Image 1 (cartoon, protein in one colour):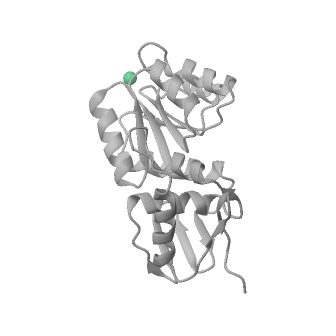
Image 2 (cartoon, rainbow, N blue to C red):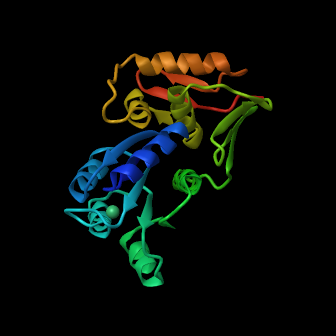
Length: 221
Ligand code: CA
């Protein structure tokens, strides 16, 4: 899963980035409204953190433009204001959730995970595939009740597949949700990561669909 953080305050931007990376996300950063607008439209993020007080173009205008241009990525707004009228304007502009500054980093992570889960059409916080479970709020995976130790890249791929079961997902799509803007993307790396994930699970729930990609399917029987 991959997040765009739009925040002009360097310290806050960096600490959000560190926290989100530590929580298993690939993270891109936008420092002003122009970058936010551009990146948000260019890449298929799983969620976006948007500060309202951004230079060049304010956050609310950025959000309006994204929605006008057909970007439906869930957006969590950071605001220094907690006035109801500001929140109402934000929801009208297409925001999905709010946190008011100052906030706990853990709350941002928790809210983002819930936004991502709901936007994927998953109502339960625990996603299940045979004996495998993804606890979305905690960001951990278990297999027959035992913890599965995934690297950050493996975790991003696997959580993306768990959020979108029974669908063919191309290698390109997986790569877009695994790497940030600055990572080098080699075409065969996804295949390597998938085979590593398979080796760590007691059942094979990731099918290869020749020439198309991968599909998460619960084991039969
Ligand atoms: Ca700001």
